[in-house]
Image (cartoon, rainbow, N blue to C red):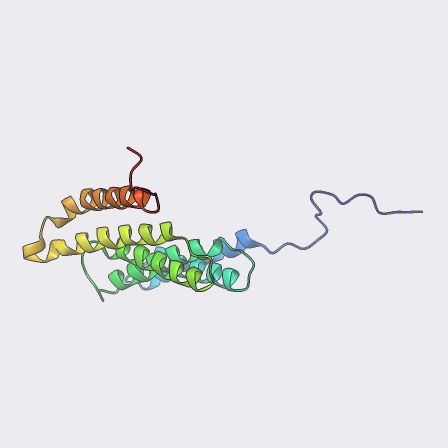
Length: 174
């Protein structure tokens, strides 16, 4: 009698989807498209394709963490593609794109009752730094990018301090 044994850790008989092969096709194909049409950023195309795949994986319930990688890659890819096609110009669009992607992810997760406020704070940080970098192109706001990060850090510090006192009877324990 040939009885099956305990399940093996690695069952090589079962077909596995060739993710590495698909990733190599995406990256290689994006680089070839970039060679054919230099205005199209190959990295942006790869980010858009991989981000879209991760978005589908999240929507179909295959991966809960895929949402965050998807929104970052999609935000990055859209921003880089717009810069490469000269739709927008200036430094800061990529940072702003990642911030918008994270904010979109937070909103989608919040609608599904699983959004965390730290993601919204991170999205705001990216968006503010990106906006400050873009402000360099506006004469009255030139130089704002050098003080934006310290101001954001100070603002986050104030929010943390205020949040720590909220909900305590008598305000402070000091």
